[in-house]
Every structure is written in structure tokens, then in C-alpha cells.
Image 1: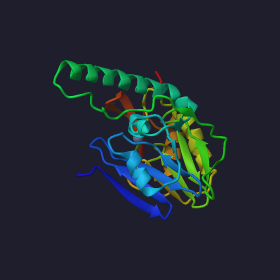
Image 2 (image 1 turned 180 degrees about the vertical axis):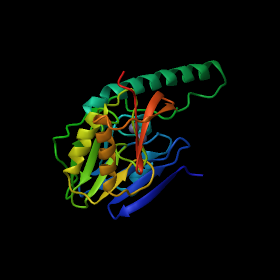
Image 3 (image 1 turned 30 degrees about the vertical axis):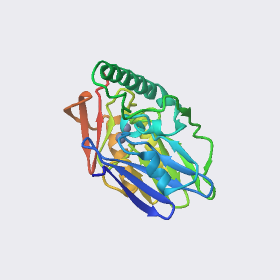
Image 4 (image 1 turned 90 degrees about the horizontal axis):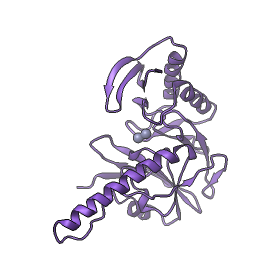
Length: 263
Ligand SMILES: [Zn+2]
Ligand SMILES: [Zn+2]
């Protein structure tokens, strides 16, 4: 049974949904006249390069919304991938630990049965090209704007399809909790500035990487209100245990912000 689904969004756009018991993740493929853009690379457990090739014959540029494992897993299937420089260190650490794991697995195999070394997934493209968000991206008749939105990680970006009024938001404002409690997360004030930056753009729909899609743009307002409450010390989240250690969670309307105490 396949663990992914391709959902056409219009004649030049597709959503690739990779199912995973942890949390399903969505990638988006946008075709122009000269080039196509793949937003994110998922967990790396599906034949992403083959799926993309079955949808478009254009050369494909892969841009990562950020460097987390559920967005970069399939990068090894592509020659070149772009990432915001602020997430390069995180990506490097992840790639390094994976490579180590891979070597250990292969060593185990060699001492064991006659089976040759297997391709261990996910495997990553170990070098990323650093993204310049100032550079306009034109796929040929399809202009896209890259917006740096540090918060969930330092190198998070959103991608705006101006003509369609679509904002691809990665993990920055899914309908759920935003995680600011991770190793490379930024504080609520940085996240708040990023949300304000998004508010200045024109779009009618947001397409996040997880949970319900699409989501109305008002969701950004909800995150902004919650971040504002935290920054103004008008609210405090309740203590919760997470797989990333003890954190706080501020619930607000449809969303939540997970963060660490300042201390
Ligand atoms: Zn993430
Ligand atoms: Zn994610």
C-alpha cells in the first residue's frame, strides 16, 4: 500500500502528501513554463524524485522551508537543494548524524548475512546551496517571493505565489501548535516580527506543511495575538512535557505556541 497521495491543486500545482505515523507532511510542486519548484522533501520514505518526474518534465528546483527532518528526508534524491543559510548548521548536524548511522548499519550488515549493503532511507544530499531570499524566483510566467520568517527555526521561509494569492507556510503557521521549543527555535519576539512581515503580503489562502489544508489567512492573526500576549507578558503557557523536554504551551483560539522558559 502506498504511503503517499498526489492531490492536484490546479493544472500546474500539486500537493504530495507523505503519510507518516508521527505526522503526515505535505510537499508542493509548482510548475512554471521553464522550471518547476518542489517545496520541501518530506521524511524521505517515498520515491519523491519519481513522483515529481511523473508530474512534470521540467527541471526541478528543490527549496526547503526549513531544515527539520520531516522536510529534508528526500533531498538525497535530488542533485541540488536550497536552504536558508540560518538553517545550514542544523541541516549539517542532521546530515552528519544520519551518515554516521548509515555507516554503522552498513558495518553491521557486512559482518552478518550475505546480503549486500542496502540503500538506507532517508538519505540526504549532504551539501545544500544557500538560499538568497532577496533574489526573485521566476519559474517562467510564475513569479514567487521568498520571505524569511525566523521563529520555528532560524531559517524558516514562506513562499508566496503572488498571482494565485497562495502562501506556502511550511511549519510557521499550521492549524495547530507552532514549536518554538526546539534547539534552533527563536524566541516569541522574533516569531512575532516574522508574522508581522507576513501580514504585509497579499494572499487569500495559506498552504501549510501539516494538518488541515488549506487554512484561511486569519490563522496568522491568531498566532500574532498569541505571540503578542507572550511578548507583553500578559499570558503564560501551561507547563507540558514534550519529547523536546519540559516546555510551556499557550493555547489561543485554534492554535498554540510551544516554547521554553527564558531561564
Ligand atoms: Zn519543523
Ligand atoms: Zn514539519
